[in-house]
Length: 154
Image (cartoon, rainbow, N blue to C red; front, side, top):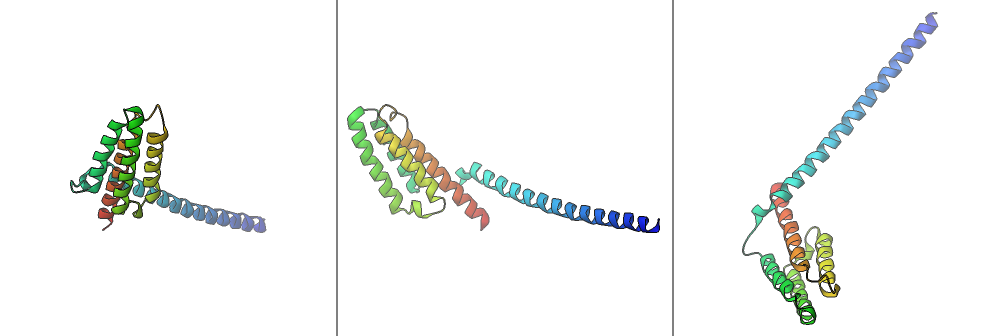
């Protein structure tokens, strides 16, 4: 009988130790999830308030202007496609001269730009949609978000 009680007490101690370990692990996981949620919330707020980093001396405003002009010219079928190619090259040159693709998130920026150029130049029938302007706005927003996050980190 005494042995039986000792075994029960040992089992109970082992169970309590296991529960304590699990509680510590759950607490650690909760803290990790909480930190991740804070980081993602901070990134979301930075993206939502990125317009505060806008500057009128920014090269991307010129890109936006050229993008709007290119989208207007693509309303004319064949001549518009040729002009769109010229504007696409001009926009790529502006981006490369200003180091746009050397900064953070360069793959996202380049992917947006390449996709828009392909749809605008090769997408006969759908090139009347403002792909150039959309890509310029998306790239500008990505850049403003980067600036905002770097400013908050510093």
